[in-house]
Length: 206
Image (tube, rainbow, N blue to C red; front, side, top):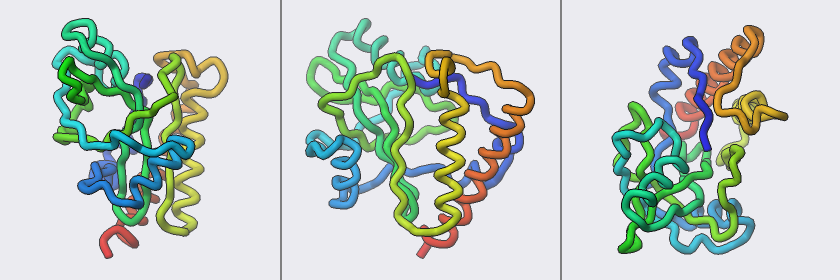
């Protein structure tokens, strides 16, 4: 589901990139349910719940489908496809296509590793229709503020996704970027960092 992600050096050292990561919503609010309903194409987000994180020790970072399928092979149960819901409070909601594991007792666990991200739970909503088909699915973003910096953030996010997944790259696990593309990706990541930092400072801390 996830490609080997390039983390440009310039973006990696940006304080904004480190400080302003999306959060797991603490409470399932009517606004979050409305967002989930939109992501599901109008279907009710039944089963929307917090899921504990128990990463597999042998799993590749961010490879949620691989990790869930490995759990099924070893312990039974089933993989459940849906969406992880993230938020920058008062600024932005995001839905990331995701897979978790359902054990034989029908309990859900998020078994994917996230590197240095050690959060204890995610907010997850199962998708009654969509399944992973071997190509990436773009994150759904819902802005909560009207601001030119939000527009810039959304454009940068869309361009990054297209650079990773446009054309034949949709089925490639690792993408060989040209030097010019690497430089462009670096600038786009910096733009995202700058915009989200400014937006969180301006709106998220009110």
